[in-house]
Image (cartoon, rainbow, N blue to C red):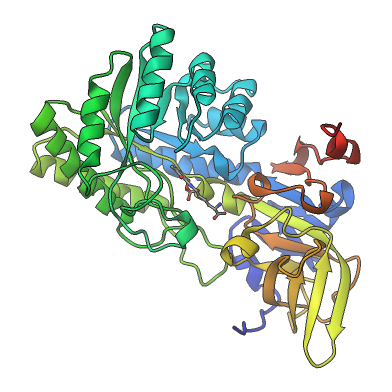
Length: 443
Ligand code: LLP
């Protein structure tokens, strides 16, 4: 599909932390070409002030609209490293983790473990033991086998572990297939529709070493569809009413998962998060009234919408190749190893030449990486200035979510550093890998 050429400054309208000065792209008010020079490329930049701003969009709306004890959990899979844990911890958020590695990251960052919720559809006995020993606040149990394994581990410690039960509400979020999880045949959770959720809840309530705090559901990621969370609320509250009627059990917490979409390109809608949360709260209050139920404490687990627009990746151009009569490639010094999202999902990105922001984007090209395969495309069919040449700095916007965390060592490319920008200064939050790091575990 052809895209239309961008006017020089269009890219910077994507998010408030983008700007332009003297033909240079500014990120969080700082000159990106200078940052590339100072730290080298490829380089992940993260705007700490924007992360905190995004956290507050959630926490302030939660405080305004939802019952006391409701909590925002940052889905650390979006970008998991210690400084992220510290930042969201300071903002008062809890943490959604999915592995012993994410638990260890949080723990060694000094994150309060009682605020950690541990997800995952295939936790081993070892994972469960590690979580219990780490003092993880809540374990989100995905199914019957895990439930019984956790009961046994908690029993061995003579502990009573707080749990949520993951329920599949049977909702299609209309996002891309790889990140849809709410539909009945999902690999996650236990389905209401099949009647298995009923049995699951009854079994959980009978376990002496587990304390069931409530239910969890998550329908998908990068969701724009208007009423997905409202529909989750309706389905889950009807389920809660049914469970109360059949067992007498009333959950305290309802976790609605994550998923609000973000703008990668200007044609993506901008989601007004406080307004969305207010509308979820209204729906919840209305259905609670109708079903004669108390309003539960609400949890949400945003990942992408906390960090995506707080991130940017900088590269240096290695080659501009024109295949006469066919196409042009602009090849950079990173690629699918630091950003696999186009290769995996056909994800869209806004890209620009950070040092030529005053020049029109009049050259149609594919932005590609340096990995040894043709699928190593960061973004096809973009427009860059015709003068783009070897040595120029290319910025790919909105790479804060699922880029660092999904980076691989393919072709033994070194993972780039993460540099945080905060109030005019910059600091290294994660060091870049060295050649020695690459062989550290090799025998
Ligand atoms: N909670 C649960 C249980 C989840 O599975 C996820 C995302 C989230 C919360 C956070 O969702 P978010 O707010 O970030 O949309 N690698 C893919 C995204 C995978 C999302 C997986 N689960 C990508 O790069 O788009």
